[in-house]
Image 1 (tube, rainbow, N blue to C red):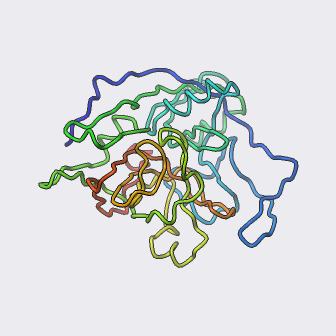
Image 2 (image 1 turned 120 degrees about the horizontal axis):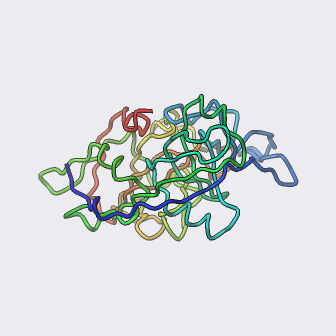
Length: 287
């Protein structure tokens, strides 16, 4: 097993409230054929969509599994978005579900939500504006002997469950569900940092969707992004590799699709993907 600086990473509380879904002046979302559709989208408590489920085919747009939280104070929400890491423990601190525990499953840019898994019986007790505390742990992680690989947005305990191995060439081999080429990465490209939010796999080309197994993707799947550099922002760089996790559903908007929160990135091809259909955080977190 590769070694990380686990004992040096700070564990700190961040906090948010369950955020109600919102709509603008028009309730319509325009699909790739120019047709307006009225569909559920981001926010709130999504009762029947969870990590491990397919992220394709829902009658929705950018659907976030489980519970979506944020802060209305911009600075506090930025800390929530940047310091929260996939796999962090979350705990409800108010309302009828007080004491319930779950796990962070991703961060969604744009509307700026942290997404959290809770058991179904706990979801039934929750309400919009309930407070949730997260034990933020993971930013600042480094891999011993692989400092050129930038780690981000992942809890150390989850990292250790990914099954990462170093081969005899000094490369890190990581189980992934599929590899996605850079030309399919859309909304979110050009963002200033990979340490917050996500960016989308475009699904407008149906042949590419089938070729790369995008139609089979699930929330929580670990994927490899080929020629995608997220070390200090999101850009194309030939030979670079990024590992990420699927956090929200497919979308009807052009240039959008399943969202990927990034976990590891390297400017060279030092990370190798090992295809495994079981590379999903629902399995690793046993949820």
